[in-house]
Image (spheres, rainbow, N blue to C red):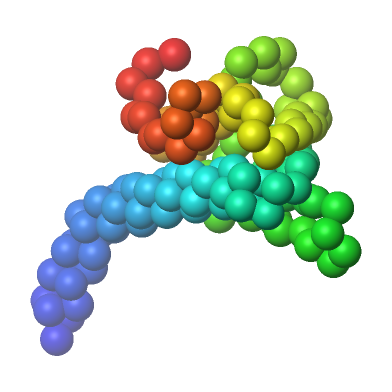
Length: 144
């Protein structure tokens, strides 16, 4: 019985780092897709409802928020543990307390912004709003 427990312990010790890395990769992919969907929803709301939409990106709180003039409308997206907003491009000065506010106007060009996400293992992804199409694109950032 003791030998079986030792073998199981060795197997768990060997596989634990790869399981942890896999979970971090799933969290990063999920967070990236959630940010892209949130940005797409903001652009669609501005165009389809013909309403100005305020998009608030807070690095400090690690969340995105969307507001309109419609009473009671507010949407927030909090990123999962282990994934953080590393930068909002262009023009991020590195201040984590900075809150970026963007206004999406109906019929106007979508601002060409990028939100760079990072996880604990140093993996980075960039979600960019394409000003030509208005759709978000996701890129894997390989180096700084």
